[in-house]
Amino acid sequence: MPMTSASATTLDGAAGGPIRLIVPHAPGTTPDLAARLVGPRLTARVDRPVVVDNRPGASGLIGYEAVAKAAPDGSTLMITAASIMTLPLLYPNAPVDVLNGFSPISNLCSTNFALVVHPSLPAENFLQFLAYVRARPGAVDYASPGKGTFHHLWMEQMCLMARLQMSHVAYKGASGAITDVLAGHVKTMFLPVHQAVPFQKEGKLRIMGVISAARDPNFPALDTLGASGLPGFSGEAWYALLGPKGMGEKLVTDIQTRIQAVLGEPEILSTLAKQGVVVKGSSASELYATMKNEQDKWARVVKEGQLNLRAE
Image (tube, rainbow, N blue to C red):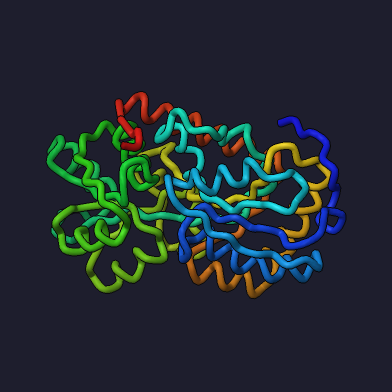
């Protein structure tokens, strides 16, 4: 992943003035939470105000464009979700190259998800779930917050790997999908683990397993779907820090070092853990590799599953 030189080499040496931390998602989302936790603490470390700027809309495209057009001097950064890598599937003619149009800086954190079912579906574990669905091709429906969301794509990935046929019910947002799964109108979906666990304790939903490759450190009692009946299946909702294309290596390293120091603070770790978020770290090249693998993976799932994700 080549990096070109830029005028600034550190955040302190940048042009001065506020640092804009763009979040291409709505307030209240995990990227927004991360930005509002990181911003004030980064301000203290660089002696420059960090301003969180939410730019939701068009599957993140509004925010992506704002960052892509900014100067690569460290004064504009972005915290975004892994869903950035599905943009080409939704908008094939988008004016932003999500893989090569930004400077990867660092993976920040991730949220684990669980496969949940309504109690009316007679499956106590993931193997029973697979057997039940396999015996009823197309009869079991699943919910998602919308076409092309990870909730949708993870389920299609699972169907391809397990040779299942399920019916997708797409909602305009997560709340409607969750409401209908809780009511039993739709039988299953993926939910963030920290949301799924209370529903299971209340007997409203049943957890089949989590999508992470290894057990979740925040919920170690829950087994993974890969170990529970579908070897090789895993997924991750990661959140990363990117900047405009052309940021120099020294500037990227400077930002990465300061951000990771912020994320290592006990209060940050504790606050994120309560939201089911695990702090991560990576080099710029490791993040680039993750982004490329993710883009290739979803392009393959869409092709093999013959899915039409284009935004209407």
